[in-house]
Amino acid sequence: MTTDHPHRQLNNPSPAQPLRSRAARTARRGFTLLEMVLVAVLIAALATIVVVNVAGKSDKARERFTVTRIAQIKSALTEYNTDYGTYPSDLQTLVTAGKGYLDKVPQDDFKRAIVYQYPGSSGDTKKPYDLYSTGKDGVFGTPDDIEVWTMDEKAP
Image 1: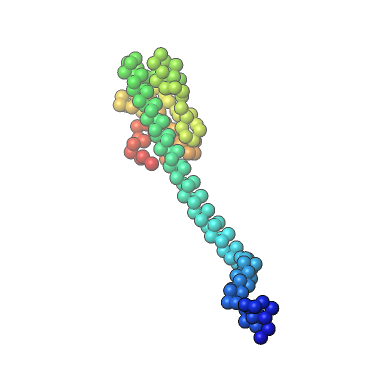
Image 2: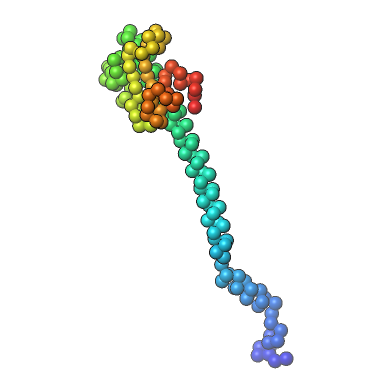
C-alpha cells in the first residue's frame, strides 16, 4: 500500500469521508417540486380555513359591539328622562345637553347611523322610543336588525 502521508493510507479512506460526500450530495439536492407544491397546498388550505372562520366571527363581533352601543344610548336616554321628565327629540341632544350624556352620537359597528325616534312607533308606554341598527344589510325590517327592545332576546 502506498501512502503519501505517514499516518494515512490511500487505499483505505477514513470512515468520515463517505459520510461527508453523502451529506454534501443531500445538501445540494434541496426540495423537489412535489414537496414544494404539497407545502403550498397545505398553506393555502390552512389560510382558507382561517379566513372563513375569522370572517364569520367579525360579523358577530360587529353585532355584539352594536348591541353595546345601543345599550349605552339606552342608558343615556334613561338618565336624560330621569333629569328632564321626557326623552330628547334626537340623539344629538344627548351630546349637547348641559350634562353631556354622550360624548358624540355613535354609529353602529357597520358604520351606519343608529336610528332613534321619539315618540316610538309601537304606541306601547313601555317602549316610548324606537332605537335600532339596520344591521349588516342596512335595510330596516330584516332579521339582522338590532332593536333596543328585543336585542337581549336574540343576543349574538
